[in-house]
Length: 93
Image (cartoon, rainbow, N blue to C red; front, side):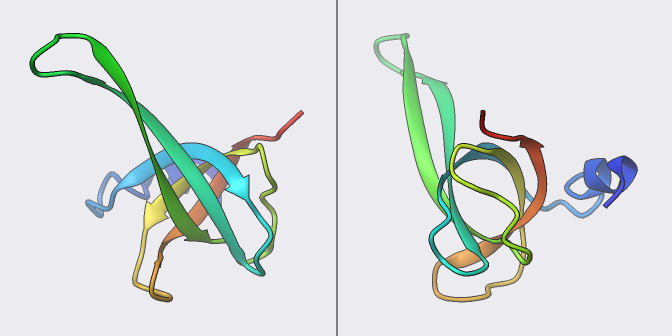
């Protein structure tokens, strides 16, 4: 995909787009991404780190553990896999 198409993926379609780190690439055509966010605690007014894991479809097995990737919502492909890999933002060093 070219840069313009990647930026429009979530914009016009209303689909969610997340950026996270690949924590597992051991499956065929599937990866597990951990997305971390910081949320303000309603009572204590301190920022708390939250993280969530998503399974995503990686058609060409491009992404590897440690890579920063961007995923977008898609149709359900299996019980837990409802996300697709859009691009690899940064390779692991």
